[in-house]
Length: 79
Image 1 (cartoon, one colour):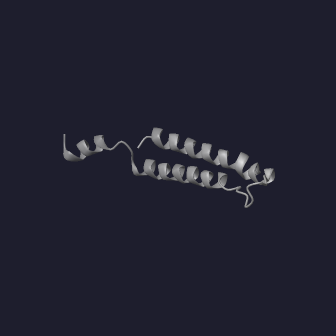
Image 2 (cartoon, one colour; image 1 turned 30 degrees about the vertical axis):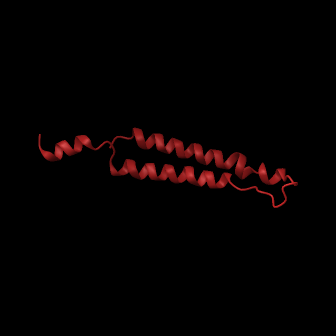
């Protein structure tokens, strides 16, 4: 067995796999940023429209789940 074949057998993921993993991680991070916020300047005031907005309750979890799906795809994709 030559050196190149030996190194090839040790490479679990290819360049495309790592690229997809970075895309998935970026989607997860973007989803977390979308979910953050909603803090009130006055602790005695609760703004339900800010906390339970479409961005935090619907959009952010969808983006995070999409990121995890991309991560699973990146792991199972043949190199």
